Length: 324
Image (cartoon, rainbow, N blue to C red; front, side):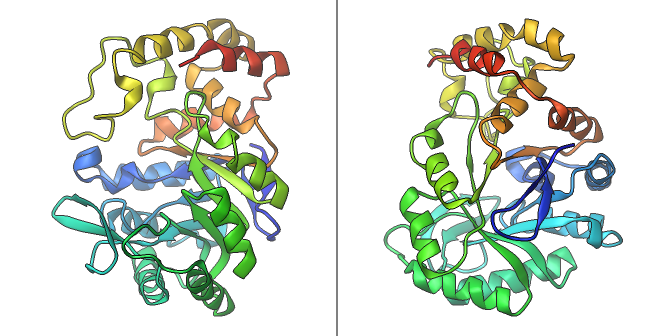
């Protein structure tokens, strides 16, 4: 496993991180075996993954509770990240979505952040969080100045309740505003071989400011593993439903593109999914790759990508293999 520094902080994390959205279960992911989820987290740590990411809204608190149980007796081995800004226990904010009987609002006010962090600390059974992300940024009608949001985060850092400040789903403007009013060492955004939007502004901005970029959904929920075929139809209500990659005009091209990596699988003695993860990680030394898993065999498979160093010509072959 390769390791890397987080921004300008003193945190050193594994190049591959464990994402726990699916561990939260709920209608997005279906029923979970919490003990299997705990075994998965333990397996990740044993395999060299030290960064575990969660969020309050994953399973409406359930993911944090499971993570808390899993790391209770090995907290010093974990770089723990969670988030704030999506509230499901208050109606103040900009309405975002409803799920599993809860209405979720975007709220990055100081009061909401301070309350959210206290709840996360309780669910995670810890007295500090290594990385605190703002999960989604403010939108109308409930706009909170970045200055107020950063005031809350810097206060929490001074109190020792968080160690590093991060932001998720940000624009270039957000990065600059956060740095104007405080610290920002890591950002988190969706990035995969078929979703390269961040290459235009976000990746260059993170490089300019030496902010670590953590990519989520590098496998596009399994689409880049080679296991999903052209006749695949997402289940109604699932997390894949409605995604543009599964539409008839896109899915066949993606499947054909992934199939074209067969020679690379043989060259690197790895799976298609390993290649997709390694491709994202190869884009910059600042890129960290967040991979979701809720079963031991999934994390065992994902971590193999942490040892793959792709040749420049192979990186380019993969980039050209899927043009949408």
